Image (cartoon, rainbow, N blue to C red; front, side):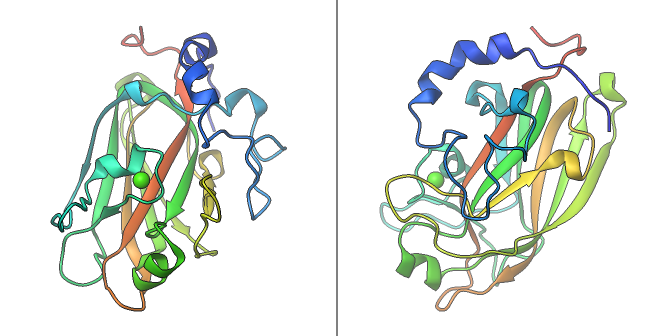
Length: 220
Ligand SMILES: [Ca+2]
């Protein structure tokens, strides 16, 4: 794994608003993956500011139903009651969401609120991801190209017991690939935990941790 520096000062400039967020990294995690503990390098526990996202997209999206919409914007609204839903027939195996960054990013971890976390009933009725392919693309300054790995969600379930979002999974990227100089990341559904009522597969939130990679000439 390559190591790299992060311009933490730039991140801190935007951290003030995030400090008030229920998505702070010092929340407790059911599976013991506490970001303030030894699981992550304490230098890299900041949530990536949303302004560093250039674009987010999906291979398909379920059509709106009444007031409910299911676009990728629901992945970043810090609201577990809203979600992205794939829009193809069946469970959406092979469908994906991806996030592109304005600059090369040092991405340390990804928190997932897998499934439709609006309520326990809604969660149980809908499908969530069991097996997922994660692919990252690197900036040319970091050698370009891409890397992938397969991630298995082992603890599905309703995770919002109160107003605070609790992830049902946290992926520490350094366990799988180089985390520096990332320009895009894609999450592809390979297999699902089927819902009791619907074959729609859902993700309620994706929270990225990290900051700008040093060394890229396009970084401000
Ligand atoms: Ca949401």
